[in-house]
Image (cartoon, rainbow, N blue to C red; front, side, top):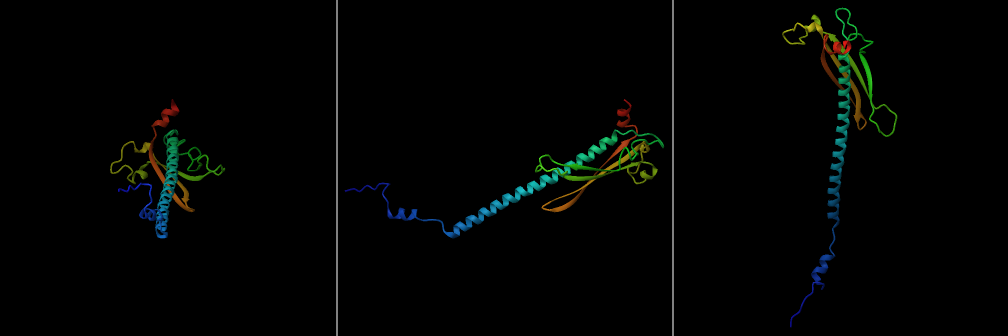
Length: 185
């Protein structure tokens, strides 16, 4: 006589295997691993947010400096003792303040990060050329140029720790450059 065992019949070995569960140690290890993974993900997102804030502030500082330098290039420049606009502090101010406020920042009316700037314009006279701006040989057109430096400083920080930042950008402006073309034509 043959006995046929059905797959639905319960054997004692299979019945005991179905009753097994995770032990307390296994659950604690799984929770610990999950906490480490979620902590690493949160730290990564937080770090990305701080890098984004710093990059945004640096980009805004660069935009401010370029805007100031491009505006200076459009100023008229007289000759000799009649240095009309470029060296006139009422037309090209030596200090300025600009704000960066990204729209939608919690619906508040604050002005965001405050950028403090300064503009330094030096005509390349013989005294300035002695500082080797051009290197060893001074070109003949050096007295018709000015060195303009824009410096921007701001303070912002992450996690309640303020940090001071500063950037500067320099360019040469020529007496007979684009500003005379734009103003005269």
